[in-house]
Length: 225
Image (cartoon, rainbow, N blue to C red):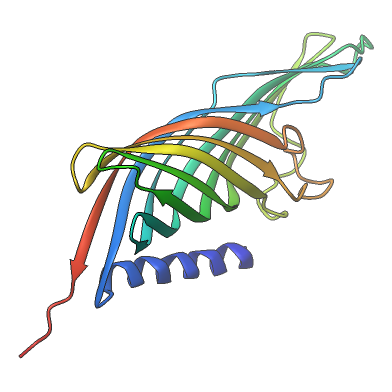
C-alpha cells in the first residue's frame, strides 16, 4: 500500500502541474477496450478466458517540439481478469474446475511520444509502468464429487501488488485542433509475481486494444494586476 500511496502522490502532482502551470499544454482522455491474457496450458491444467475489459481516464502533460510531442501520462483504469481452470485429476475430493475473477485498479505512469504527420494523423509510441491494486476477487470451485465451494482460502489485498511493464504503438486522429480519436493497441507484462500467497499468478502476459477520445487544451494562467 505504501507504493500505491507514493504513485498517487506523484500522479496528483502531475495533475496539479498540468492544471496550474503558468503556461503549458495538457490533454485529458477517456479510453475503453478489450483485454486478453496468455495462459500456460499443461497436460493436467487448461485455461479458458472469459470476456475481459479495461476502462479509464487519463491526463497528459505535453511538451511540444515542432512536429514532435513528448508527454507524461497518468490516470486511473479498471481492468478485469476472469478465466476458467479445468483439471484432469479425477480423484473424488479434488477440484474439477475453478472460475477465478479479479478486478484491478491501475495507475499508469507512461512516457508518450507522438509525431504529427499532418493536422489529422498523429502516430505515437508509449512505454512505462502500471501500478495495480486489487479491488475484488471471486473464486468458485467445483469438486469432482459435485460439491461447490466459493471464495479463496485467504485474501490477496494485503499482499504484493502487481507492477506491469507497458508498451503501445497507436494512432491519434484529429477531428479538430483540440479533439482527437485515439486507437491504442498495447502489450503488458507483469514483472513481479506477487509471491506464492497471491491468488492471481496466472496470465502474466496480456495484450489488447483501446479506443477513446482525447481533448487537448492550452492553459494560460492570468496574472493579477
